[in-house]
Figure: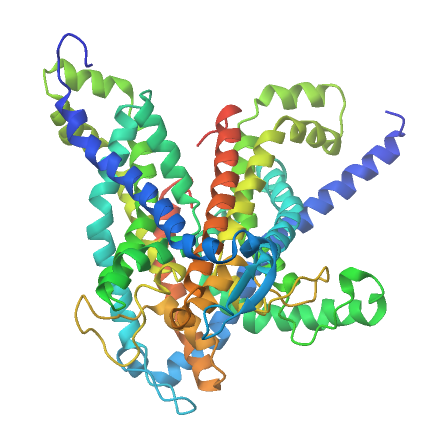
Length: 283
Length: 307
């Protein structure tokens, strides 16, 4: 150290001030986003009233109407995606946790983590190729399959970690009772890990409820019809926002702000309780 | 298990589900390859090395080159990582070592919310709020005074540009990179801190030494952040300007691979080769994403910061 103490202490002050400023800059956008969404969205919700939630989309340049079909669509897509994705996800997670040192177990864990980070637009394009083209139409099934693939790795990784975190002695105790591996896992360990697994499921649901890219070429979108069948196109709130933002009409931009506020509230309603009940989450 | 003739029925019950996931991933890769074949046959690797987008009803005249999109993807993601680098490290250090207890937890919750927030929310905010702000306070002044520097040489007409996309992506991926760096920083043995401070180091000097210990985690966090940035679709496509363009200037509009797919796929089926060209673009994203993410995950595992 060649610097005098004075210089070193000055550098320390500068450093502390610097990282404090950068820390604030990291979270500042969140507050700006929340403020912007609320400032633009709340008036729309007040003006649109109940009809904004239940009604169908207004014509360009004429009033607000409602985003009912998108809300119904998001609900249908999320439920369907959960039905398709959760069983596979939980069972795959169990495999990775139960056989952590086998080749397949390790490869599965790696694959799940890769899929977690995988560009979701590629999932959408893939599902379009294997479902939408053969069926000849965008559909709720295709959209849900796309979301199921996006959701799967989150739930599987959470299941895996929840099971790994159970103290070894519970496993030993269960085996010592003479239970089969089926019973050890499904009667004892799953019960102990249920909080972690539920967290994964809820994180997965919160994630896919807000996804847009996987739905672009699969769900197709719907703004006037609530639900016409599983093999017909459906709407989704994120998809609707994406489409409306690109339109030149002011009333469509207003609707997009209102829909964004609703989407943000739905996300926070699922996410915050989980987050606050836990130490950390993986996203 | 599995010795002495014992058959692990449990394993064979679960195995199909694992294999299904592998099969799904393999099928995905196969679909991208087979759907790209027509364009490779049509024009070879020129699809990746040229910048052109000639859609024509006459298939012989059709010609596509997605170089501009690959360039834009890398450019915007590098910008995002450059923004995330100082922010995520500072955030991790501040939250673990220096933040007052009362605001520590709220700060972490805030970044977790940011990491999970639907990306379309960033998109609408980016398009309607961030772009005008950047144009007015960053692009216009820099262009007015420093336009002789190539980085600032493009006249910011709309504000939709590489810079807007890079900044928005930077905001989106910082919490994610920070979570990885934070975990590694937190897990440093407390003894290190005691040892450093006992030598009379200032907090600045101590942090400098500690940060050096978690270099692999920082590299991994930034790689994974890059992977996330390059795969992001809707938020970027709303702020990048969607123009076939290869420009060094931050203020020029461009394309990314994912925004190209999002924008062009809707009308691609009218043409003979466009769908295939877009799948080929997707294939390149597939490999970039795969390489970056596997590398990031391996580094994390190797240095014991594995999740």
